[in-house]
Amino acid sequence: MKLFIPGPVQVSDKTFAAFCKPMIGHRSGDFKKLYGGIQPRLQELFQTKQPVFLSTSSAWGVMEGAIRNLVGSGKVLNCMCGAFSDKWLDVSKRCGKDAVALQVEWGQPIRGEQVREHLKQGGFDAVTLIHNETSTGVMSPLAEIAEVLREFPEVRLVVDSVSSFSVVPIPMDELGIDVLLTGSQKALAMPPGLALFAASPRAMERAASVKGRGYYFDFIEFQKNQAEDMTPSTPSISHIYALESKLEDIFEEGIAARHARHDRTNSLVHEWIRARGFDFFAPEGYRSKSLTCVANNRGIDVAALLAELKKRHGFIIDGGYGKLKGATFRLSNMGDENESSVAELLAAIDDCLPS
Ligand SMILES: *Cc1c(COP(=O)(O)O)cnc(C)c1O
Image (tube, rainbow, N blue to C red):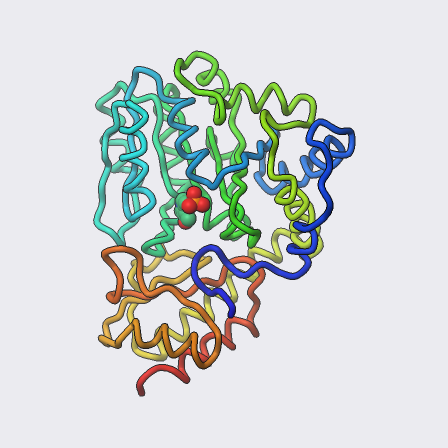
């Protein structure tokens, strides 16, 4: 079986081999060497001078943590345009925060002007944004939104890049992003269970003043331990080995070449969609580079397609997220996929599609 769902994605043999290395103590010199050794490359990838923290959790741990660390008695604006971003509002509320929804229709991006209209009302501590909404295949204009945030220096910008990290450039420091987070099992093509994040000095300052940060996701704890090349609690050391190996791959290919590869494989999928008479769920100019949400305008039996594809070719694609089930299907070009592997997927879908 091979995964072409938008997460978890296929994990390479090399990454798995690294994941399976023998354990070391998490307070040992060997661990500090491993942890400290990957920092420079992580910082380059995050395009930040700040340390990159590793959290043994899925992305949601840090998504919740960002709320608990950056939102005090002020409000949080949750930008919502799909399943993951919608859920962030609920998570903010469950953390007991005063959460405000900026909701657009699924399939549409978040625009800078909409963020400005909300922030103008005042009283906000933070904004949450999902750069690439994996459920709808929509990429919101991050630079445009970050620009708006500069008008509101008291508001912190939290960006989820789970399915866009290392796919397109995200210049964290240059854009003034306060927290940039990602997970291991999507764009980075590692097994699930690790989240990576960096926080601006402004974010850390805020965190230091916010009560009720808890322990496991307390950014200040991460910072204290980072100073000694360690994590607050025992991390998934296997993931860190896998990350070390993945960084080797990324820097061997080159970051710009990695971005270009995603662009090419994504274009292949786009050409196929047009040639087969399907529509895109996302509007032109706001389409994800790491996955494509295909609108089922042809009215095919999506469940039957998934079953045939699995049976005949061993490929797994996604049949639409939540309320989009059957009305869309999603094809991922994340991680290690290249032109030939994506072409192979598209040919296999052709083989299974009713003509
Ligand atoms: C998958 C995903 C998440 C959630 O990741 P978990 O690993 O389940 O915590 C968050 N945001 C985006 C954009 C995602 O695609």
